[in-house]
Length: 277
Image 1 (cartoon, rainbow, N blue to C red):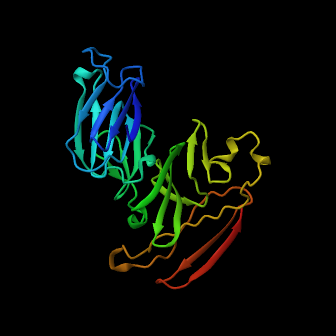
Image 2 (tube, rainbow, N blue to C red):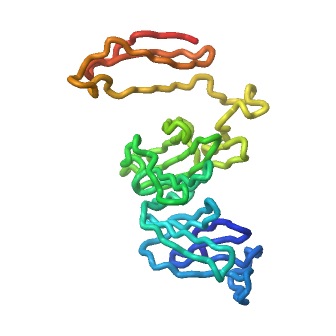
């Protein structure tokens, strides 16, 4: 009776909250978990001593990983006689966020109680410093997916009697940028060249142009609003010197429209320019 499962080196691995234990099936036989004949194909079981419930499992860089909220158990080896289990005290997977685990470009991304983390084989590092951590905590559900260097994270949070908050966050791992999209996704699945998202009513393609009939697809978005707001400019200079000129460069697709506005000293936004590409 296992809570979370993952696959590595032709074995299924699972963990049990009730027993606080990790199990591995017989080599090549996912139906046999109690084969102990003293050979390399044997099943495997080990009890861990860390506190708390398991919150997720995954495989990355050849390691089998089992998570708790404040711990990562890493198992490695080629056969039962040399399997080794180590524990790292760090920010693990948050409760109800087991499905946020996603491997992207040899790095494992997941939602922890302190935000979104990236694990590359050593110690996890936080990649969501730009986001409000409070809006990433106490989630009811979290689902992760990946496409072309982008990590998709769908979150559902309760708000004390109000309608649950649903968000789809996208992290560009190459540029370190976060975006928020307005399509919900209770389920995600990737085909290698595409990421599909299910919002409860329809299936969406993350990159519509990769679909053969995308121009004829019903419900294709014709207008997508995007907003970029800079921080205060000029206050970090010696003696708070003012700017005499600011150059802004952007690349816009044909028929797209953009507007440039500025706020002086925290005042109202003033539109300076409007252009159509």
